[in-house]
Length: 151
Image (cartoon, rainbow, N blue to C red):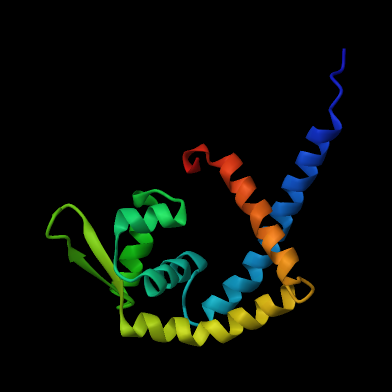
């Protein structure tokens, strides 16, 4: 006997595939924007977080990016070798590093920022403040459903 799919499960699959297509399309364009400064999206995300929040331990950075500390280690190594961030041993825990963006890292972000904003302005041109807030709330709801550790 063939199991029938519910409308809800069919809709969920359709939503998933559309989210993945949208992600790939956005990723393709944004990758080109950050590549103009010899960066990748993960590198840019790390620099942006450090620029916004100030110096952070690697663990806090990983948690803020929703990845493991090990996942960001190689990206951090490349940024450090390129002179875009500094690593200092934490006095309270010598096993941990405090990461900080350098002036060169900030300069790269400042050059990317106008291109990034221009692209996002085009993408979200039809979004009112109300629609933007609703969309963000729905995305947060999806993230909470996918990540039970956020509750």
